[in-house]
Image (cartoon, helix red, strand yellow):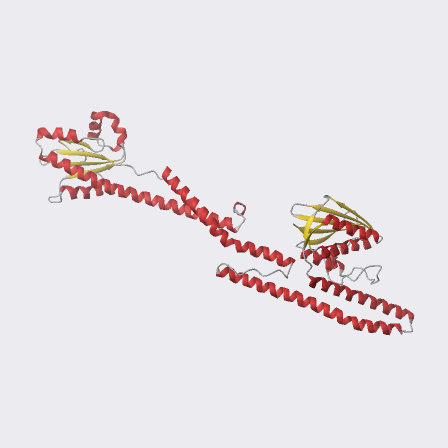
Length: 459
């Protein structure tokens, strides 16, 4: 059932409004037509009762010789009139609300004094016609029997004991599924669709704005706040979002400043320790001490560099990723590493922070070259994203440790020397930069051996 529902709130709301109003309109039209049929019966009953009363007075006041001529002249398709010695309706005909309507109308026009003697019968078709009326209609032309349809029959007793028989066809109400109903429904639906689309668009538009703002916040905590406008609920939600963004920005800035302050303050003790180590007499201990201090200084320098990059706020620009990766590959080759580059397109334009993205990709390629000897870079430009794949021929990384290598100062080898690799911040900084551009970086061990790093950057 869920698969049949529209996916967006706007479409679902619009569908509910259209279906609900369409059903409401159809029900209203059905009630209207039902009331209209009743109203037609009442008004038609009054009109027919007035004609019957007029004919009854004419026949009642005429001589027996003139009665038949009056009846013949009064007989027409809208009101059949006949004169007989015995009434065409049984003494106890069936009752119904239609006959009640005509009875009240006839009493009003014939007069209620003495309660005039008459009989009424409502029939739904030719099959219910009393036998005298069948014979009368056949005598006048049998084709009218099939056209009679729903009728109200009346038999009024004259003063001489004869009967004046009358039959009034009832006009059937308009069928529900008519052209008028279809046009009414079409006009209503068109108006509902247009007005509902406008209203739903204005109601759901803030959700789209919040979604884009949330994605932007994930890439740039320094993004400007959202304008607080619209209905009270939207303004309140926008104000809460802006406050959350400000708290996150302060938290990131405080963390960055704290890292920078600690790293800066560690520089002086490290320098003092280096000076003291120079005066050590044990050469072996002196060498170990200076190596540890060198590693500490490298970590402090890396932390300061990371803090400066976080605080720099480099502006975005349109760059060619093909040219950027080619430069990274050439730099690694110049440094003595075996790195190759392939791309599916000659130019891949991308909106980014050029220096930060170049440092991030350089860190990844350098890390692969240091541990994997031979490195291959692939660039794939897709419709919704840019995919950068970096393969190496190294030993790979156990799958359980794939997330560990992105933690700050986390290294999988025990040595801290310059030859075996860095301070443990390279991949951390690289993924931070990639995620700041709305993308992500994942690791996977290749079946043929080595590690594969995939960088996905959304368009």
